[in-house]
Image (cartoon, rainbow, N blue to C red; front, side, top):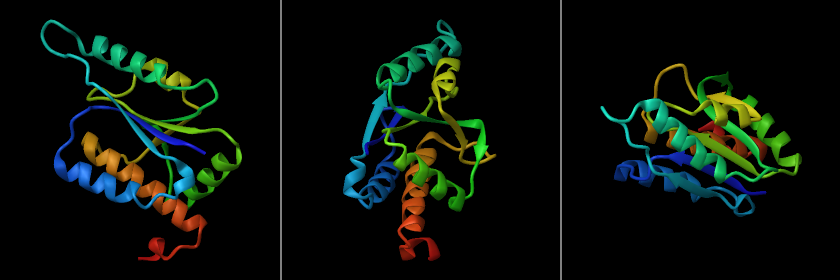
Length: 156
């Protein structure tokens, strides 16, 4: 099974890259994890945020395969406990489809991305900086894997 994170934002602070890489290095080899970064669309007085979101969404959708199981990270999504995520991850893995997680830019995911999603997940009710959302995603995926493997990480 392949897991991909398709995320808007191609430059992150060093502490984000370090923490992100630390968790990804712990992933099982059979996950074949990959990060696809999408450049943040131009915003400003001459270009509306909606136009940038549409541009970002189009680029994200181009990276998806038709058979991917898509999980959109969105504030309006469903909140899960770590145990709930572990159960879902187990089901997704046995479903035989590759997993693609989507994290939008400063203005979130466009309606086309949300419409393509098989599941919408909210990491928290609070607004998170983009880099922190990336870290929280990979930490929770690792935690879910550790729960399913009865690994001691979850009990720390």
